[in-house]
Image (cartoon, rainbow, N blue to C red; front, side, top):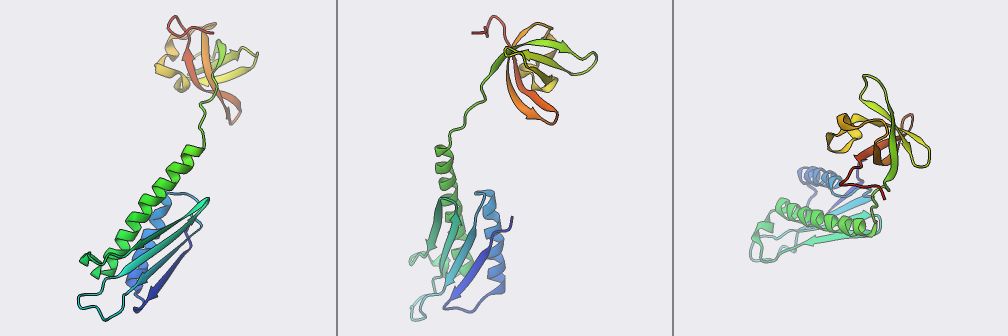
Length: 189
């Protein structure tokens, strides 16, 4: 997805090279937050009556679901901001940190539940193939593959062995996404 980016220059001539850098940095924001709706960047040169060099100000507004990120980088004591590129770089660095914080807060609100583990028994294997079928305690037959067996224990399984499993929907129906052998260290409840 391409983020819609608006670039505004105030108190200075538009710079195609600086605008290209801004658009490049805005495109990288997608790595830190999905569903960015738009980004508005303003680069402003201060009034020209300063005794020392001009210190540029960069302001970034990033609109995301459930909140907006606003960053203003103006540092009257930081003479690195006499370069508009440095002011823009510092503003985007701050925007990335704020986006990461925002996404962490959103992730904390959404509880991630591990899939409930079901109980079953190995029903059968397909001869010469790295897969078989498990019958759940509810009587459902579920496909499982060697790669879904935890701890590489596929070769230790036998028909009738009790197992715990998590089920996911596969291309051809339900299949075990994770299978754990049940033994003396993992008894069935």
